[in-house]
Image (cartoon, rainbow, N blue to C red):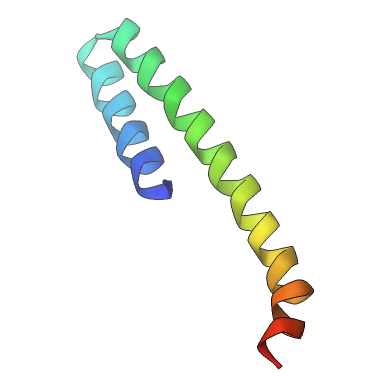
Length: 58
């Protein structure tokens, strides 16, 4: 998911530089959403890894 967010951010930068503002805005919006979803998933897995999964592995 982070990979797609980075790819869309690069697409947005290139489209913005070439003057395709509509496409750049759409790609940037999707990249932001994917990045936020990635961060939420990362934090959830970090908390679960420190608590629940640690006790299951013992």
